[in-house]
Image (cartoon, rainbow, N blue to C red; front, top):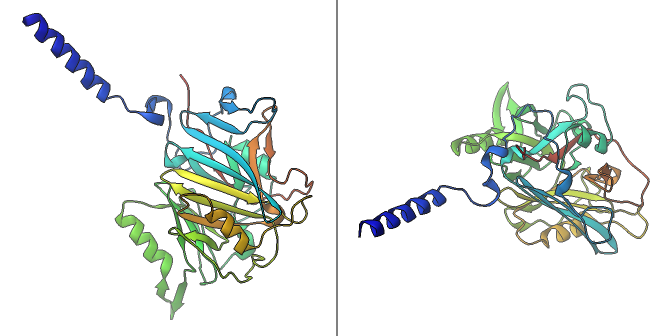
Length: 322
């Protein structure tokens, strides 16, 4: 009888220990870091994390215990597109990096910026110098501009890694006093949920807002009615994202997409909650390592035109093996 009780006690103890072990991507918590906002470089990527189709020299995916990236290709309206599905372990892995500084902006090729930070995947940002003085800009927890004039939708990435689209916010003063500050109201709402703004971008417009596809676009500094290259960042779940980039008329075999067509493409992916249109045209850049582990622009492969960027949005691995 005593022996049976000892066996039962040991079994219960083993079960309780197993229940203490976390499951899924967080199994090796000691090996998955959380970045500081001011961190300038991601951890080194794992060479064996790249996945290849049989007979292909370029990878279609990267995976380690902290991040999963899957590259897909498709075609719509006589135009090629690339979609990257990204899942990360913690919110500090979705980040931004400027080519230089906000106050003295200059450009670098997207591949160079991505390489400098060890990006697992990177896309272009919002071309912030073009609209200085009338936009919202925040990078890695620092707010640079809050002069919204009600013309542009704003994308915010918060400290939990969630995307929010604020529709045409306004910062307005009368007689030196703030009479309308939509971004202030939004920040107060975030703070009530114990969240803060980490990154804020102004290009737009929103393509999908709170699960609803947007339509009826008009041309407003975004060539809405023109068939062009397009780029968007979307969220499909907690710490799960989609980056979608389409080709344009300068790409052999493609005609490009209007914003209406692009929003249709983006909304066709299951689970899109919020999706935001970023800078397009020749600035449309998606960087991923290819054969030989080089940081390469993987969209528009047959178009030799490359435009340097002011900044990128990127995803970093957080996995550090022992």
